[in-house]
Length: 74
Image 1 (cartoon, rainbow, N blue to C red):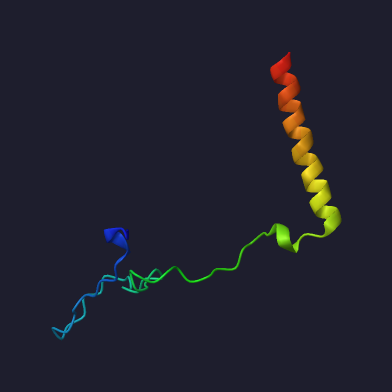
Image 2: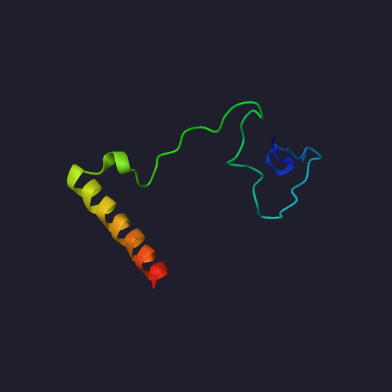
């Protein structure tokens, strides 16, 4: 379901004079409601990490989880 605020709207300013309200009416989030969102570049991805980086991250997560377990057992 697409929220009502995501639809594109247009203002008709063809009455021949300038309104001078200082903002433009372009919207970055405009696509067909039935179409999926366009792909965006991920700022971080585990797939781009080296094997050593993945192992380091996994062992850090494991250490945090074991710390939670030991604190819960106290």
